[in-house]
Structures are given as structure tokens and as C-alpha cells.
Image (cartoon, rainbow, N blue to C red; front, side, top):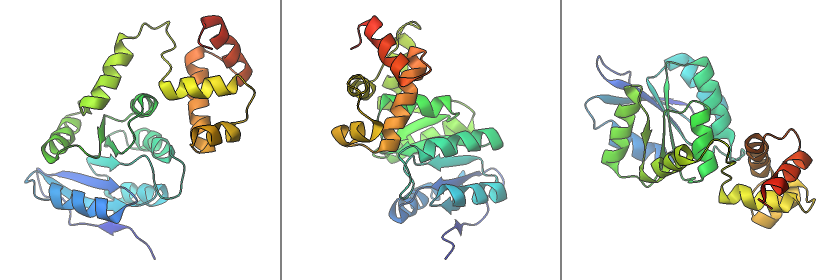
Length: 222
């Protein structure tokens, strides 16, 4: 059964919003909150990346509220979808709304074109304000993700600025463990380990895992 759901179309002057989240209760709650705002209307929903692509191609909303974890996919499926949306529909503002608060996720989401990043326990007024901010083509972050952005700005360009999680992955990589075993040690998926490894390599200017370990050792990171 096709689980896509389309709401009434936005009226003149209203922001049209699509919800991309695999939890029905979350979508229902968001819809009940946002549809109470005079200038907003939820026009569509999607539970998977595949559904989201179809819904966005058809509806072309102003805003997408995007979770990073969709169904049984990887923890980074939402990030990959974010890249697609911003590349194929640059006119759509992407606001990440997720439970993940990790420096790497926040920075990667922005790198992939998201206009904002908000944690799901944000209060209603802050969420509504973030949506309006993104609609003005400005950046919107809750207090915690804003702190991540501030730290990244304060960090000197030459500093690798590894997150705590990336540092843990790096230390295990240095012992020669595979991504699968690293994931088991840290209680995260192998796909998530690969995501962190890519970020580590990028930050250290390395082309391979071995080179990343070598560069990290020269910098005194391990």
C-alpha cells in the first residue's frame, strides 16, 4: 500500500510544507501543530527516501522537515536525501528535524545544503520560528546545534576538529579493526562508522584509512 499522504494545497501566502519522517505519530503531531499557523500548511508526507522523492517532485513545497533516520535505512539516509533535495530542488528549504545531536551530523547536514538543524524536543514556538526563518532563506538552529556551529567557526582552519565520536572511531581504526568491529565496539551501525571514517579522512586530508591514521599520529591525535 502506498503510504504517501497529501494534505490540502497551501493557499496564497501560506508556506507549503512536506514532512519526511518514518513515524506516523510524529507526522500527525507536527501536522496538528503547523496547520494551526495561519501562514503554514502541511501539503504532503513521506516515510522513506523513495516516497520523499516522488512527493517533492509532484508538490514542490517551500519547506521540507527532514528526519535523518528513515525506516530501517542507515543513520545517514536523511543526509543523503538532503543532498539530493538541495541539488535537484534548490528552491526548497530543508530543515532537519531529528533526534540526533552529534557535531558531525550537524556540520554534515549544513555541508549538504540544509538551511537549519533542530532537535525534536524543541518547543513549538521555536520550531515554527525556525520554519519561518528557513523560508526567508536564512539559517535556523536550536540552541544546541547553534553551539556546534559556533564551535566549528571558532576552530582554526588548520585544526582537524574531530568530534568525540570521530576520535573514538579513529583510535579503534589505529588498532587495525574493521568498520564492522568498530561499530560493534561503539554500539553503532557499520554504515555510521563509514560515515565517521569519511569525515575523519576529509578533516585530516587523507585519501585512505591508513593515511588518516598516519596523519593523526603526526598531529598527536592518537
